[in-house]
Amino acid sequence: MKKIVVLISGRGSNMVALARACAAEGWPARIVGVIGNRPGAEGLARAAEQGLPVRVVDHREHADRESFDAALAAEIDALAPDLVVLAGFMRILTDGFVRRYAGRMLNIHPSLLPAFPGLATHRRALAAGVRVHGSTVHFVGAELDDGPILAQSVVEVRDDDTEQTLEARVLEAEHRLYPLAVRWFVEDRLRVEGRRVRLLPRPGAAGPSGPVESRLLWSGS
Image (tube, rainbow, N blue to C red; front, top):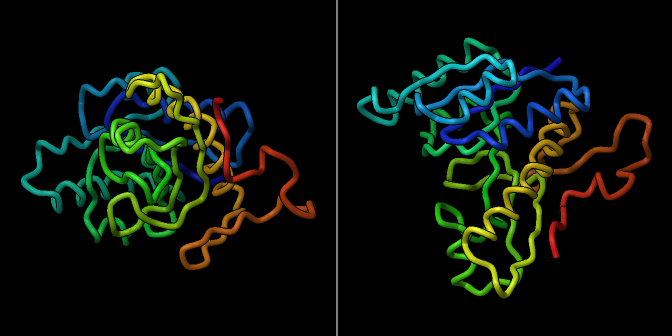
């Protein structure tokens, strides 16, 4: 039974999607803690509603990024997780923190990386005139929004889209994509080979078997 810690900064909708999928699908895992860096974050209350243990490491109480990351790592390590999941965690992590959890820390980013790393991804996608947009689940690397990619969801950009409508459809797709990718991790079905991630078949299966196994999810039309 693997242990998962989820880091959040805001509303925690991806965290809720993970918690619900873990329970409904009977993953060989459990969420042992949800840690927020903002005491008033909506996601902390939502985590408590799900019966999940909640902790806060307020970044404002630390003089620099290194001291905050050290305090955060202490809280994480106290829970001894097999996986750390960033779910809307809006902090840039130090190199030392990333190395500490290398190979066992995932992030979801609201764009088709390597396109549009950083903030305001939906606005930038519309400004660039792209016809597809989406989200990416990846292992966390040393650079911002970088690391081997597990899976992506693709959303068509409509002619009448606004930043808000596009964001809503991408978020809906994220709620399907992230639980799928995290489940693969806890089932030991991912193998990182340089910049590429191989998805191993389920035990006893000849290979990926159907659309639910695809690492490229198409959402919306």
